[in-house]
Image 1 (cartoon, rainbow, N blue to C red):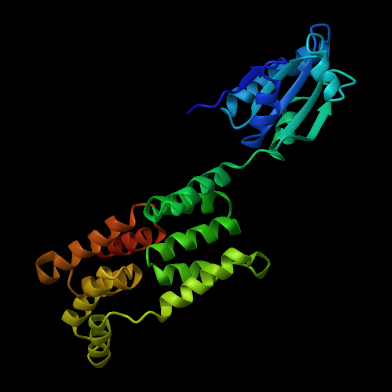
Image 2: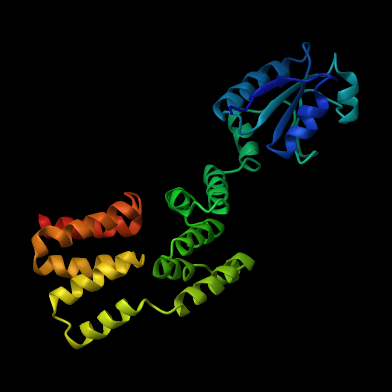
Length: 285
């Protein structure tokens, strides 16, 4: 549902839009009057930004002449006065006309960043058990946020939910000590349990056989298939790549089809998929 961007405030809607709405998104309250020249300069700037930000904050306009009780309740003494409401309380503000650059800087301090909003939607998907859909959202949010720790942790959580244990381990290893919060320690515990879980007997047997005959291309291929079936995608791609290095058409193209199947499961934006897609490309061309 599209959010309202601008609203005019009176006694009938003040509680709804100045207080209640501020619990779900920031509300920028502009106290103005017809006779106030600086108000006339500021209002178009605020309206332009409200439209540009498409509902990420609500611009609530209060005519201080016709809504004197509301202005008095907020302690307005000069015009224009702008207040930012969050969780039912004014948290910041300014008086007098401001340039567009100044208003942008003011808003930047308080508006959630696009990657934080993306992470919030991905977190909801994780809570619903849909780690596959959350994964590409978190990968992009991580990139845009310069690897913000809370987003990295959500990404690791998604990987663990998908049983991509080695990828989760690599990601958790990048978390700085200062960012190792309760969520981090919970994920580390889950990682440890996943690592302790016994590998399928088929995998252990093939690993043992391959250790004794490391150049056996058929054993390498069979182990790659087992890895793929148990969602050890990094290990599966590595094994299949070794097979394709030696014979691009191995098993009448089955090895290459298996390789491409795993890339398709991972999705185009997955860093692991991108890495192995490039490796395959160098083999082909």
